[in-house]
Image (tube, rainbow, N blue to C red):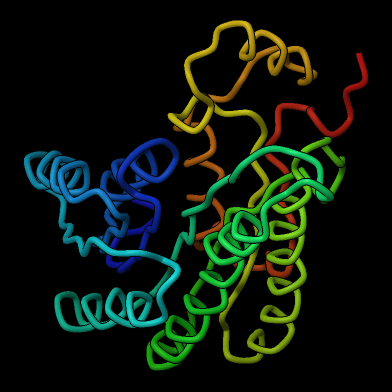
Length: 250
């Protein structure tokens, strides 16, 4: 039980990697506060966890709002007595296209969902973890903007690379308080964000050295490691779990 007795926040928890992480973390003993926009899917995931004997609660909302990040932390403290970790996983690719023709509104929304949300999360999660004598934060970043530049994804790359920079500074600032901060960089993963175009999936599979896309549970297990005490000496990293996407050229 790698997370036994720990209270963890997960955002983007209504589907894909976040929902998979919620079920895995609950099975590993965590008490969860789940966040996302879709109430019905959050409720479904929480009910499945409760039915399996786990502990979970949720608040629906928008990670672009500072008040929502604060509310998730307050729920963790009021319902479970404190906060030990967070998997800040919510994100969006936004509209794909070159920067010169990109709508300003798209740029700002991609930054807001992917990067501003990380600022709000850290702003409220770190003080709560300080009260517990330490904790672990994981941000979902991307190999896009870190090991490779994919055409049409300038906003996404900038936001996700920004998360890595923030991760490193937070890790340096709060390491003395026993608060670890890491970024997780998944490869192509079979989530709703990947769509249903089989031809596109075939192309994406070819990008990876393993010649396949990840199941969400595989990325969830990487996040589990970073949040657990097994990663007690790991902080400030950009941990790549991309099936060899970053090193594959053929």
